[in-house]
Amino acid sequence: MNKTKFTQRDISLGKRIARMRRQRDLSQEEVAIKSSLSQTTVGLLEVGKRRISLRSLQRIASSLGVKVKDLINF
Image 1 (cartoon, helix red, strand yellow):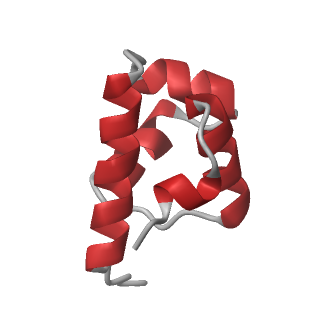
Image 2 (cartoon, rainbow, N blue to C red):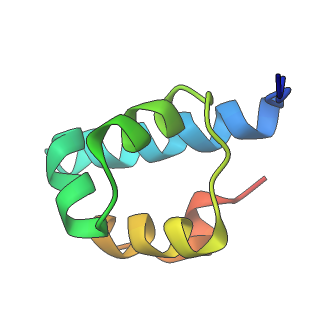
């Protein structure tokens, strides 16, 4: 069984995505639809329980109207 360890960066990225989503008054479902991801995926990303691919990160950034660098400002 694959036991992926999620880092503080995964959690920080998820919190940043969630904060920006709420600031734009969007639901997880709306972000999922706009980014062609599942709502489950968006939810798991927001709590840092799923790693994100660059392509998905680009899609989420686009759905939020921000640049990728705004989401990964570590």
